[in-house]
Image (cartoon, rainbow, N blue to C red; front, side, top):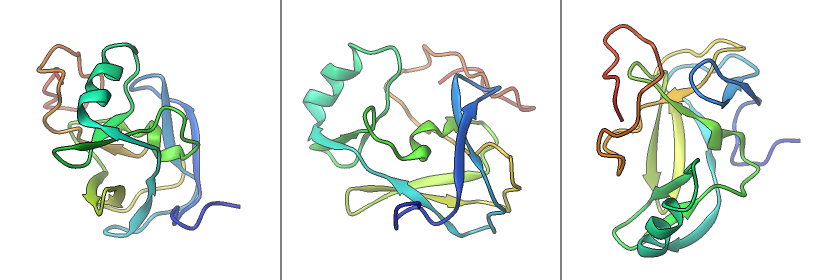
Length: 137
């Protein structure tokens, strides 16, 4: 049984983009909330220190002072990979990270978002492979 904040059935698996990904297990209509991810709340200062200690970073700053670390979360959306042509977006509402479909997402399709401005400052290679890819995160 999925948690109440996850609105559609999702699956995790190997991603052609990077490592693990999250995939739609059923059709998701455009502009619908897909779900959200929950994790450990911590200060932005602690989150930035923690981010330097891990190769895989699953942290989102939700305010000027607070961040959420999804490393230990069981929510599948924590595996949403970046794409320069995403099919979903995430937004921060009341210190929660929510995901919405930008277009219809077919069963089996990987759910991707644009990470936007990151603290990586262009040092990471983008692996999405879409036409017009920025190549850097």
